[in-house]
Image (cartoon, rainbow, N blue to C red; front, side):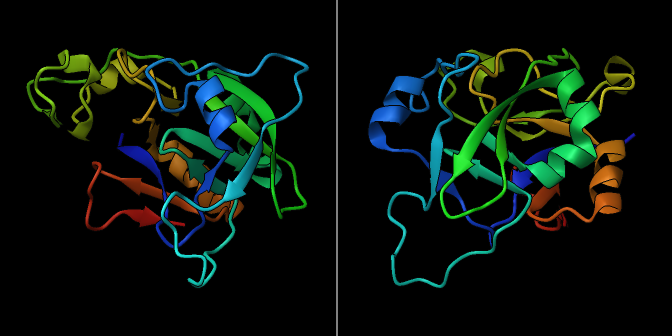
Length: 194
């Protein structure tokens, strides 16, 4: 079994919400406030702070991120991956400004204590508890993962690190979804792209 860090391709658009909504939702803190069922959907806008408005527009795909930890899946992606996403997390409908299709904010609820700390390389700052430090190059105990295809590990309250297996990668390829980057670590120089 291969396990990858789920990321967004650099040549695809990134998104954000207004500053008020970002603060209310805790996107910039350690506690993300998930939407309430029936609440109006959040609206995400293309661009990340500091983007040059004159730059060439980035590609639109089936998967985008906001703030590095908010994962946005298109309706097409949910149609292809829905059973896996629904069994391992929560999907909140959102609006992506300038896009006609429905998107969903995915929050993973499948937490598996499967990191092999002896072989995992974590980032700074060293004053944080080990489980809260970014995972640069993960190593896993595969027997703990079982048949799960998408998961997070304990201590990642903002879900910067979401992991997927080769079975999830195969679903992406089969459905010809666009915008995904799967790496063997945070800075993998040869990630799998679709």
